[in-house]
Structures are given as C-alpha cells and as structure tokens.
Length: 102
Image 1 (cartoon, one colour):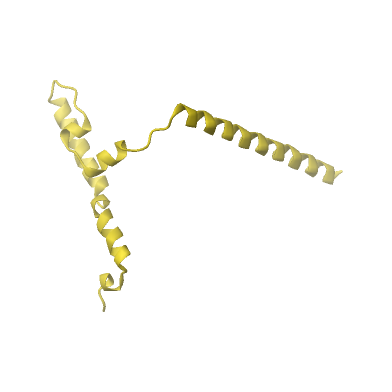
Image 2 (cartoon, rainbow, N blue to C red; image 1 turned 45 degrees about the horizontal axis):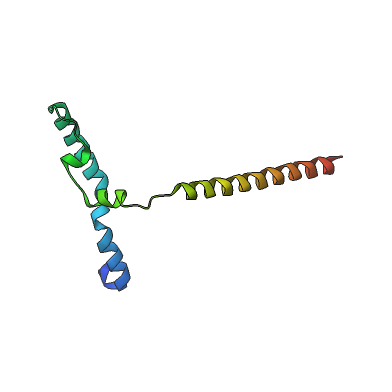
C-alpha cells in the first residue's frame, strides 16, 4: 500500500500544511472558553478571551477589510433593484398563470 502523501501534488501538500493549525481549532476554542470562565469568576478585572490565550486565527479574524458607508449604500441600492426585479417577475408570472387558467 502506497502512502497517500507520495501521490499528492506540491500545491496540495502546501495547502494541507498551511491549514493544519485549524484542524483542532474548535477544541482549542473550547479550552479557551473554559479557561476564560474559570479566570473570569476568580478575577476582579474584566477579561477578554484574548487575555487568556491567543491563537493565530484571532489576528486573521480582526484583520479583515472594512466596508465604507459608500459601499453599504451602493449595496443597499443594488439589493433594492434586485428586489424590485424579483417582485416584477413574480407579478408577471402570477398574471400569466391566471390568464392560462381562464
């Protein structure tokens, strides 16, 4: 029987290697929450989860793009246009169905 890593392409090995840190992320998050609750109950300070234990994915979550107010407004207008188009299609589709029945 051949070892599966011998059959992988270089880019596949690279992707696996770069995501290994996330394999047990949920277990580590559970551990951090347990530690947080215990520490918070026994502390007079207000603690944050990152005060207890920091993970590499914490900085990735906070380093995301920010959306400007202009982007929000543009997306709202686009969503409204799509909504209006869908309502027109629904109205036209229901009228067509009624006409077919009669």
